[in-house]
Length: 202
Image 1 (spheres, one colour):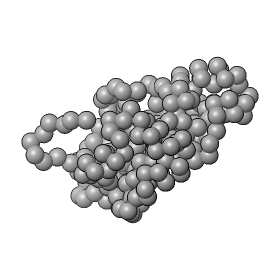
Image 2: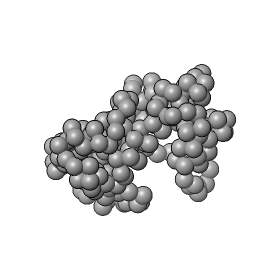
Image 3: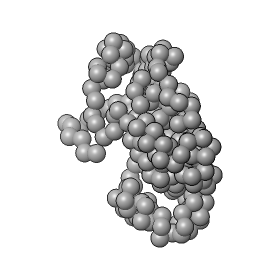
C-alpha cells in the first residue's frame, strides 16, 4: 500500500490468523475482506481504551503490553465457527500436501458444501487457500538472510516446479520471487527475535 505522510510516522501492525480474527476481533475474516474498517467499528468500547493506552505508553514494550492486555481481554466473548472450518484452513494452508476432496471427506461434507462454508468464513476458496499456504511458506524461506535456491524453495513448498512458483508469485505479489528478493528493502520490518521478546506477535 502507499501511505502519504510528513516524513515521520510510527505504528503497530498486528497480523492475525483466521482463528485469531474471530477470537480477538469477533468477526470472521470474510467480514473484513479488502475493506478499511475504523477501529471504533471493529473494537467498539475497547478502541478508545486501546488508543489512549498506547498513546500514553512510554516505549514500545509498554505499548505492546497495552495491546496485549486489551486484546486478550476480548477472548472468550466471540462466537466461534464450526471447528471443522478451522481444521480445514489448517489442512489447506499447512505444510502437508492435501486435496480439497480429502479435506471435504475429513469434515464429512460434500466438496460443494465445504467450498460454500469455507468461502463464507474466509472469503477465499479452498483452492485459493492452498495457493496462499504455498506462497506463505515460500515467502518465509525467501526472507531468510541466506535463502535456498529458488528450485529448492519451489520443491519444499509444494509447487510443481520453479515456473509454477513464479506464476503464483506474479499473481499474488506482483513480481517473480527473484525480482521480489532483489527489490525487497524491508524484508522484515520487525524481526522474529524482537517480536518474540516483546510478545507483540498475536
